[in-house]
Length: 234
Length: 234
DNA sequence: ATACATGTTTCATTCAATGAAACAAGGAGG
DNA sequence: CCTCCTTGTTTCATTGAATGAAACATGTAT
Image 1: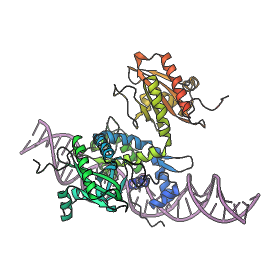
Image 2: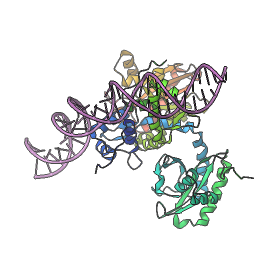
Image 3: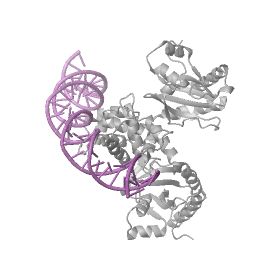
Image 4: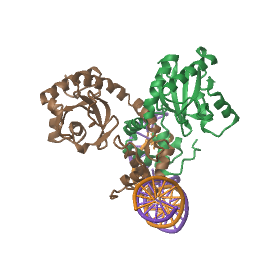
């Protein structure tokens, strides 16, 4: 089952090890890390020692590894750097409260989308990735389609999404859910990412989703963001 | 000024680059990173590309690097893993409310101390590092002295601190502030880190600080922590 | 137009990374 | 109690990935 090809660079391998951790896999032992990464036990062990030394991982009493406090440190710097996060959190929370559905904000980083802010209206389901979590854009979903439309070369489909101003997905990632995603722009018109409202498909027909988008538009505008591109405005 | 000796391992060097960022140095450009780390420009550049690729750094429009969203991801896993943080936050907040001063909890990681929890009684001053932030232990302060006492080889001074059970600093890091730090232990007696109460020096004579420590002791004990080592008890 | 600072690419050399294997340390089960 | 199996750790000869000096590119200030 070790048919994975590990990256060639040492630093790449180290980052790969870090990236193996997720909310579903919070604690991993040497054997698992070696298997998942495709690295030799000895190699993984040496890399892990370095990561522990710098506090990016910590070794628990039972020998399992888990993310360490250094991540907290860098995360707080990241948050401070992107004053953006503190700006986006309040409107996301208000939208979530008003539409009583889960509201999220995603950016594209590489070929993944990363959740920078999220507010759960209901805590019921664990389907959602947490803040900071990423999923491949290839897995689809409303947010993925929207991020593609605004960050890939123009195609007829993408142009249609941009003209429409939103993208609705039903059961694309999970058959029970429906989502509407719309773009968010900085006040200077630059594209930021995708706001997504997600809930149970049975509760949300398209008309309802579009009305939610209008509510979200209003909240985001109040928070100083643009919800339609600056071009052609007026 | 490039008399720094970079670590030998590639992964070490990469982690070094990450560790150069701080709340005071949120954004660094290639030249600075190369100088601070002692690495060759070309070497640093290659490492940085890898770190950017994995989202641990991001390259801003002006070419400067800053921590990226991957840190957010791992940080959220770290928080979820260390149930510890959720345990320490409530008593820290209560202490802060009762003594009406800023209360923090620090752990030692490497030669720095990292703030894992903090509650500002007053929002007035921006002197304090944020949660997740680190400062070198060599910069001193009550927390640093206490962490040294419990994690370094025993010296007469450290033994005295441990016997006393607290450390008071006045103007050690900033002349206007005074702090009292005391150790925190897990219920099994293992050392965790330093609780610190900090405020304006003019408001806080030693007697007051010691009374604050008693209040903090009580709150921490109620939260299930030990405030005196298990050894020699009863 | 020139000088300077910073970032990027190239390439021959070398040293750090590698992984197989041996070793150590439990735990499970007969 | 002994044996087998799993997991973690150390060792060491071999190799290839990392290195850094230098050339090159780009941009900015003078």
